[in-house]
Amino acid sequence: MEAVLSPKERAQYALLAARIRRSALEMVYRATSGHIGGSFSLCEILSVLYFHELRIDPKQPDQPDRDRLVLSKGHCTPALYSALALRGYFPVEDLKQFRDIRYHMSGHAEMHHVKGVDMSTGSLGQGISAAVGMALAGKLDKKDYRVYAILGDGEIQEGQVWEAAMAAGNYHLDNLCAIVDNNNIQIDGTIEEIMSPYPIDKKFEDFGWNVICCDGHDVGAIHDALEQAKACKGKPSVIVAKTVKGRGVSFMENSCDWHGNDPNAEQYAAAAAELDAALAACEKEAAKYE
Image 1 (tube, helix red, strand yellow):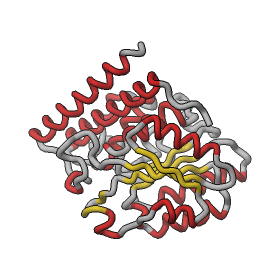
Image 2: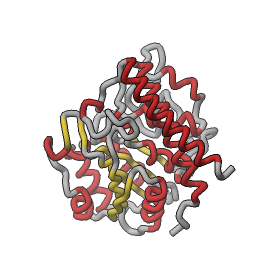
Image 3: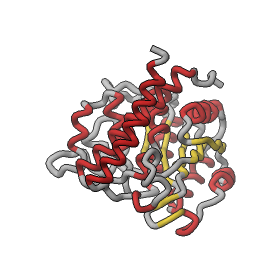
């Protein structure tokens, strides 16, 4: 397994996650709509994926041998689009087009109009099936690209997810890595209250997957989990990442009220103050290594 992240790398990826989170808040506030809670829980995961793990080239977004990422929880585009912009797929200024009917940066992942999006998603449960198809195609074509799929823990209540999981295990798709954003909250309450998918790890194990658990807000732990997934041969891997819905804004954390609501002016100011303070702390830490 590759060496753990250095303190400098940890600081860099934590800073990028803070920038993604701050950008996501701005997008949702400007658009007066969007899914903020589940976007905030993804920021560290997307930071490590896009800025360390994925073999991609923003100048060649359709390069056939690139790694693929499917955001199966496709409503969390404030984080996804922010990560893509910061990675250089399109200007950060374009994020102002989010959910504006005059443009094509829609609220759910859109592959035809947003560079860097590998699959249009939003109807929950379908993204992981597409990812399985991509991974199977890679095997048949004898390609070495890897496919990553990010699912919500509420999303895995969908039966289609488990059909896809069964197929991935059956075909030994070791080029596939699923990541479950286990923030424990869905639109109407906790996942236990609505329809518990626990134990998530045992369910995937029963379908023939290699299971890895980690702290989804620790960039070093995410990195290590991804390395373990790459090292596993003969079966697909799933990372169950424990996260906090609404991470980074105290009044949004662990609340289903912030699944899909947008903040008013007062709430925006309070949230921005918290995120700006966190961003400044990350910038200070990263500056130590310049």
